[in-house]
Length: 111
Image (tube, rainbow, N blue to C red):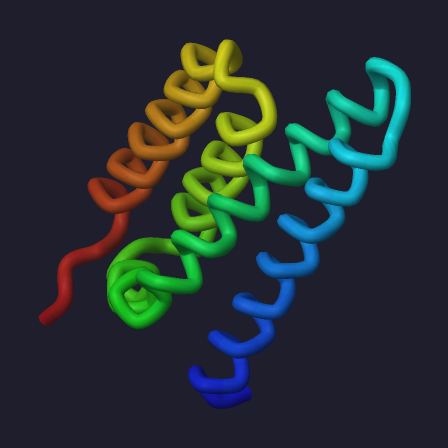
């Protein structure tokens, strides 16, 4: 899939998330609708920021391993939904970084 198509899909997805949040916040009643609406708003804003920086994010993702990229992306989503979970997210990313470093040390050298 082309980078332009990915960027358009990400932009449309972030707009859908923000629109769903606005609909829930204005027309939803109850505490659960408010909680889901605010969570959708946070994830939508995060997705729109990712949309803005997608070319640079893809360049960074090419340099990092897949587990580290997945851990950072999952950490950002968890942090966007629950900001108080930052210590757990930081520990998760630190563990993945340490494991990646140990794996890098154990790889044979190129000849």
